[in-house]
Image 1 (cartoon, rainbow, N blue to C red):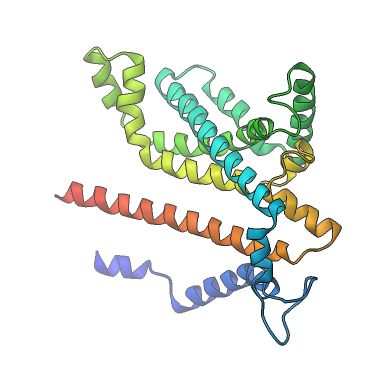
Image 2: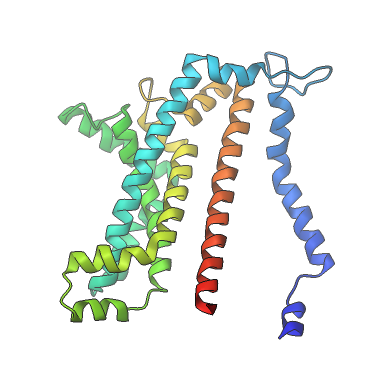
Length: 279
């Protein structure tokens, strides 16, 4: 068994190739760090000195603070709603096993398959139509942006839940049904506790997707609901503000931290489950 495990380990050539590919992919992201430290008023590499003035701008400038708060509120709300909808859909599909289940899954996955620009245009027309009915969930509002991000993020959460449900033993549901448990009790007390890791992963993924989303925000917002990625796009388009580079570094660090934290949680959960099985 030990010899078999060693034979499947990557050799030095494979590890070297993996490191080179990782460096090639990360080089553009790493290049933003020195640019964000330039003391100049335009995007450039620092030559004689470094400055944190552009990071200070992110904290002191009301426009950047407001955009960050809007992004935080929208990402938190859309992540919660996306995960709730995805969990209800996936668990209901798993319990009911309808005849047209594959068709339903394909319908839910449409926002993931359709190009983002097409989805953004459809959401733009939807929100402008809602603007004529009532001003709350409408174009250029935070609830309207939350609705758009929920539409875009729910398919990704559904994928995670369906993958997790594929590993759940149906006999636990049959046992609960045989003992007289209601449908709601089976869903919320039997099935959902087995999806807690998928729930955490879906929350992180949908939050990051909403936090970094730009194309839909460009279509469904204007001046009242400006998110951080939209403000960065405006800065690059209008005056090439170096604060955009500083914001890019902050966003990259937050995204990497969230993904690393999710990986550590999954590794810890896998270690705990294996110890409990061996124990």
